[in-house]
Image (cartoon, rainbow, N blue to C red; front, side, top):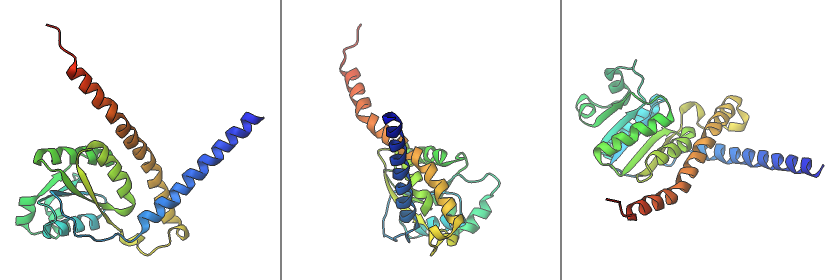
Length: 213
């Protein structure tokens, strides 16, 4: 009987923690994003909405970064369409915009961004994506690029602005789905960071061990 009560208590506490976490998550991502004059080596935008590309292009025009990566581009979208969506002129687009077609999800975005940042030697990136997608994006990007500074620049989708999320079933469902996807990403990041000191010690120990000739 006691063990059953303990299990019920643990389950109840777990549900409360997850539910409370969701409320904090939803309130955080639904806030109107702050606009800050932050500058970086480069800018990366994770595709999924036209406003994201427009905002990333604006940051590039404002000189917030020297290059822009559009990650996760649909292969069916041509270059001319992207130029039109971005609002950039042909010269700027040709010189300073890179297109990534390999990423199929957020994990792929992180890998694609890591390769791009390494190719240019970037250490500081502005990340542009939807506000509700930002926590998961930062978690995956930080796991893939632990030594690169990430500056979030969330974009509030037009259909979510000024809405009270708990009064709108569609918005609540979207946030719940994103929260469920965010939790594993956050856990993976925590595990990776927790393992980092052990991995560093292992590498140090291996380097210090004299080799047999």
